[in-house]
Each structure stands twice: as C-alpha cells, then as structure tokens.
Length: 452
Image (cartoon, rainbow, N blue to C red):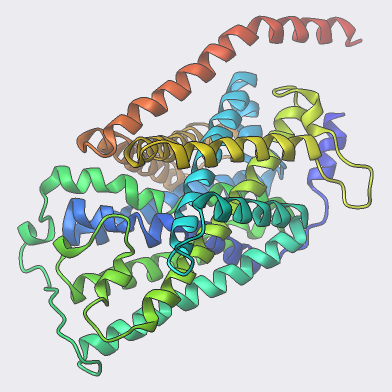
C-alpha cells in the first residue's frame, strides 16, 4: 500500500517552475504584509527593513529544506509526512495538527480583515454577511481542483504585484516632486536613528516580518504538482527574490514619505504614506488590492489545510472518514472540506464576537504555531536529505532567526499573550499524543504479527 501511495505521489505534474513561483507570491503576500507591517514599523522604526531581509533569508532556508525533500521524495502530505519519516508517528501527528489549527485561526482573521475593509464601500451592510460571502467564495476556489487553483493564485499574484508596483511608481513621483505634496520621511543618519526603538523594539518586530512571509507551506503542498520535481528549489529562489525586492523597496519608499511614528495600527502603511497627497482614488484601489491579497491567502490556506487533513486521515492520524472522496470524475474529500468549513465558521464567529485585542492574541498565537513548524522542519530535514557543509550552516542560521522571532513575541505587550496561547495549543496536542501512544504501539504490534 505504501508503494502505491508513493508512486501516485510521484506522478506527472502540470506546473512549470515559474508557475509555482507565482503561486508562492500569491499565497504569501496577504494582510500580513499589507496591514501588519504597520505594527512592525511602529515597533522598530527604519530597521523594519532589516527585519524583513532577515525574515526573507529564514523563509528561503525553510523553503529550500522543503523543496529538497520534495524533489527527492514527492509527498502529498509534504512537511508532516517528512516529519513522520524522520521521527515517527508522533512527529507527523503533531506537525499536521499544529499546522491545521494555526491556519484555521489565520483564515478567520483574514476573513474578518477583508470584511472590515469591504465596509469602506458598503458601511450599512453587517460584517457577518461579508464574512459569509468570502467564506463561500473561498470554498468554491477549493472545489476547482489543484490545476485550476494554481491558475487562480497566479492571477491573484499578478494583481497584487501590480498594486504594489503602482504604489512604488506613485511614491517615486512623490519623492521627485512630480506630485504636489511634502515628503516628510528622513534617511537615518546614525545607527541609533536606524534602530530608533532599540534592540528590543527590533527583536519584537521580527515576528511581524516573519508573519508577512507565511505561506511557504502551501508551496510545499503544491510542489508535488511540478512537471519537474527537481525545479522546486529554483522556483523558491525566484519567488523569494521577487518577494524580497517588492517588500524592501515598497517599505523603504513608505518610510521616505512619512516618519515611522506616523504609521497607524490596522491601516496599510502604503495608504498612510500617501495620505497627504491629492490621490482620492488610491485608498479605494489599494483597499481592493488588500482584499484580493487577503482572499487569495485565505483560499490558499483552505486548500492547504484540507490537503493536510486528508493525509492525516489517510495515515490514521485523523478519523478515516476525512479521507473519503466522492466517486465523481473530480474526486473531492467532502468530509475533510466539511470539517475545514466548520472550523472556518467557528473562527469567523470567534473573530466577530471576541474583543479586538483578544482575537489579536489568538492570531498572534497562530503565527507562532506556524513558526514552530518551520523550526521543526529545520530540525529533521537533514535526516532525510544528505546535507553539505553549506546546508548545515544555513540550517543553524535559519533556526537562530526563527527562534529570535518566536522569543521576540515575549518582549511586547501586544504579542506576549499570543505566545502563551500558542503554548496552550501545543500542550493540548502533546496530551492527545500521550493518550494515543498506547494505541499506536498496539497497532504496530498487530502489524508485526500479521507480517510474514
């Protein structure tokens, strides 16, 4: 049975490497960059640029690890399957469920954010109506299948890149005096001005820079659909080079337009940066871009968590019903989609009912849970892939950077509660593993007895 599954996983794909690069951009650029980057700027000032560069480096190291494992042994379950191969069943179980929980919470926050933004045009419509509409549309994207999903995400990626390039062009025109207005930002003249909130401010902002790069797990899931599996590392390099260029350029221009202390919570830094210029159309266009960004990352998360839940079920780490598929031409794991939908509904209700601060803590916890998985990937990938000296050095750098982002959450009042909530999720999953270990051992003993 394992051989059949492996052969199936190594089947012909339909994606070119550049298409996976675009999918990666589509999955990663979301409200974490368009909105949460304002918080990072407030926490650390101009040094936010360095925070994003370090986050990009760590993201590439983690993706390269995933890509090398995928090229050697393509698996639908991606990182959780590799964790299981490296350390055993407990590792695959914990990795899969930590990811599922974190993504469901993040999906809820994305839905809430884009629903709030939509009220710019329809202020009298209730928030839950927008959330419901976007949730249904996200599920429709899920039903179109992997091939069409890749095309949709590529289209979204192009639209998001176009919006950011529009900001870059307008910002350059503003800074060169072509547009009427008065740019008030300044280039830091000393190390103290660059790290305007000190080392602790920089350290605490790292989490938000990493959050803006969340989504590489979806690329890991989609890598199995590459025509040439060995192209996975190349697609990651191109994707992260493009992403780094976009992030660093746009944030630098925003900081040159206005001082860092004028950026506001829950408002895009790019809209804030151009607020003093006579551009009535820009907030509307850019709000639309943020909605597209949030919706596309939400859709990517829905696709990824459903795939992970299906593989958990196939390997006995979730009830078997969740891997049951329809018998039609386009096979769909309806029970898995149903559970994801239920989690989605609970997440939406939670985001609408709980006070803003409380839900911020939960979404911070979800971001931290993603980083726990990144750290875990770096601990086990060299057990499955032969590593060079350079790989070993990169692994250590990646682990240090991820650990810095996680520990930095303890330094700020906004993120500190999220750290403890994330530990609560990990503790619950650990308790479930302890309860199930006896059953797993008995199942292994039965298999050994039945094996001739």
